[in-house]
Length: 293
Image (cartoon, rainbow, N blue to C red; front, side, top):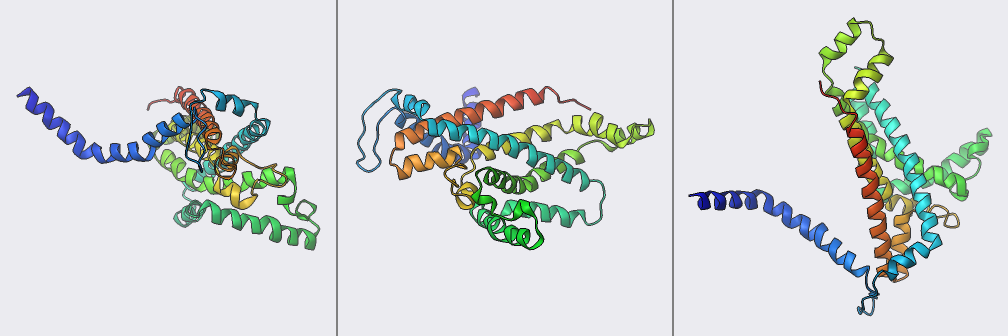
């Protein structure tokens, strides 16, 4: 009798969870294991031959000053992108849950950039930074925009941050709105009756009760910023002079253009570990701030 019940439970699990497990194994798990194995070889993508080389690829990665420089650049890019996109999304969501007129249309408008692919979005911003803003800057004497931001090593960094933050903010806004609408209205009314002003309500109640939404938003913005490639390719192509090459851009160049697939894969594994450690650490720390109503 017990055996029949166990078999029945296994059958139900495989029926509902089997397709997802199969897709996860085929799309993620098996490629990850194969890729991890290849980092310990000198596999050549054209000759299709390899031999075991141990950790030498990882040693080469940590000796590659170009990759380390681009990794540092990526970390600065992630810091500013996560801060700006979450700040924008938080306050846009706050405004669009305050009963402002036409909030549904405004929500759709702010979310639209997230529906545009990174390649298309990059070309749109490239036109703006290279043609539209320089034209306006020369016409009206705006020195900040007189030359294309994409030709300056410093301004190209901020162009990349602005374009990414603009795309991410609409997506994160939806999550923040879901978090704000979950805050009990009776708690807000009680605080208002007790004399709390809007600033106090925001800091002491809305912010504390929205920690789950904040955790999710920071996690998503971190992972998407670390893995940005298409926007980097179409907006700056790593220029000028390689000053805006993100780590993912370098990995693709190394693996598929320089035909150093094993070293490129080792760089990808190191980037994966960094993303996992940073994302899980922030999730663990922020979850400690959660409060229950």
